[in-house]
Length: 114
Length: 113
Image (cartoon, rainbow over all chains, first blue to last red; front, side, top):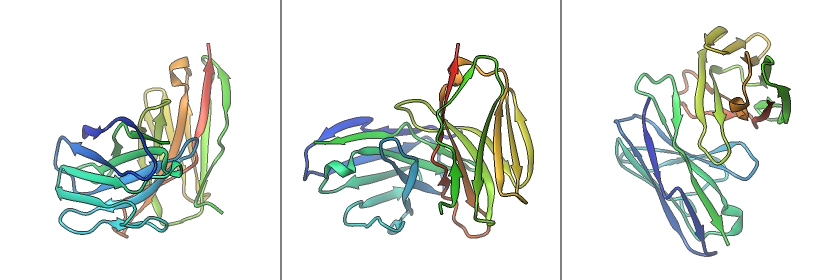
C-alpha cells in the first residue's frame, strides 16, 4: 500500500485567510484526489488532481476557492482560500494504488476556522 | 435519494458478537466495493476490497456483494472493543475512467467489553 503524508495535520486558521495543505506519496501514483469530511459527515470528493494540468472539480467546488496543484506523480497541494467557519473540516488526500484496484487515504488535515 | 445509503447507527454490541454492517446503492455502474474503518480523528483505513458480486474473507472480516439487489455487507466475527470505530462503505464505477469513490454516511460501531 502507498504511504501518504499530509501537512499540516491540524491547524487553527483565522477567517479570511488561506491555507495550503500538502500531500506527499512514497511512490508514483496515477490518480490523486482531495476529499472533505465535515464534522460528523461522510467524505465528499472535492476534485481530482491531474498531473500537469488543471484539476477536475466536482459540483459545488470551484478552483478559486480550492486551487489545486499537482506538479508530479507523488505530490499535490490543496489550498483553502478566504476561509470561513463553514470550511472547518478534515481535508483528505487519497491515491489509487498501482494496480488501480484500491484507494488509500492520508491521515487528513484537520482545519478549524475561527 | 443518495447514491449510497448506510445506517448511521450507533450500533452497540457486546464483545464477541457478530456484527453486520450494510449499504445499499442505486447506481448499477458501481462495480468496485470497499469498506473503510475510521477511528476518531484519523483518516479512513482500507479494510476490504471486492470487485463485482461475491464474498471475500480476510481474518475476522467478510465482505459480501449482491449486485442484483444492490446491497453490500461487512461482517465482523468475534468483535473486539478495538473494532469500535466508524465503518464507511465506498464504491466506484468501471469503464468511465472515474475512480473516485462515492461514500456512504458511515456506521458508528461500539463494541462493549
